[in-house]
Length: 66
Length: 378
Image 1 (cartoon, chains in turn brown, purple):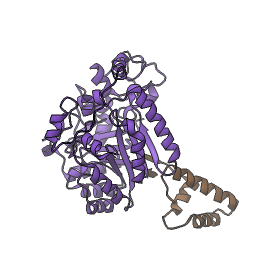
Image 2 (cartoon, chains in turn cyan, brown):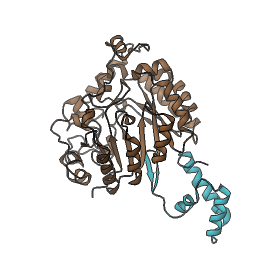
Image 3 (cartoon, helix red, strand yellow):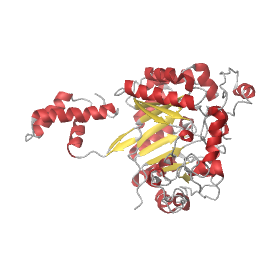
Image 4 (cartoon, each protein chain N blue to C red):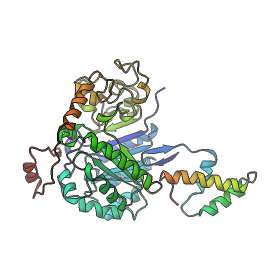
């Protein structure tokens, strides 16, 4: 469960995996690198685009900062 | 099946150093002597977390008036709750702020009354504005989510753009622009607070433009005044559906204002478990679901969206808590709201100039025919 001001969001599957990598230390590139190593069956470009889209969506809502 | 409550609103004290004329606290407040102890509050927070509550909103009155606030936050944090402090900032030094964050505070919601110092202090009935600005700067140095809350009404809406720019400079993550809601002191002062239709239309445009301009930078949430809406607000997300409010002496209510509804008895968390209160207590079951609904709500398609509106507003405006919320354009008593709007929109409604005073007493004397300031309990 992701908690933020006045809201909560259930995050599962890959979304959860992405957020688990967001620790305030890793850069976007490092997060993508690690996820590309983890999900070897998927197109690395697609992984990068999906992670970017997911995090941008949360950033627009001011839930994630980077 | 009955869902779990999502949030607990803890009014930990009704004491407050501010006297805001738009305060929605009840006119009859809990005394300082009757307030719950530290241990009693922490027990409630633990019960809430077990019941599935995610968010804890610490409010009041001014929660900082409790000297044990750091312990309360530490207790709620240990219970696993996401903690929001709703505050005027009065009583918060940089050192105390650091201690609250250290104890586990997740989100701080700081109120501002205006962008202009004289107007802000006039609305609040206290010299608070300068301290709030200082505090906002200090908050940004900490890892805590930051919301600035601004209550808008007829007296400040004409410079909403200026107020939004002012808030922008405080760099919050989120800004809440809330039209005053007419309960408690705000209802008493409604005559001076309710906006004109023209002000409201302009405000909606201004907020929409700001949302666009600040997208990704500051999230804006706005609360519209329901008197001007076509349908009523889904008050508290429906009676006994999402929220529990505990007032300072431990009484559990489905909303801030429910205490005014005659015939309802509110159980105290001293005598009953929070779970029993949520599931079984007569007060929480009274307007839950659709059984209680009159027409036109009962057969209305929107009954699952707005739940018949606000029970307290129905009682305040029609003397019948079972009535359809008069804010609804379909309500038999909608004429009550219409006549209030007619009055404010015909002629030139009063806009006052900020008054400077040497003391609250002096301020009250100078504004006696304008409005009443919120008073703290004994």
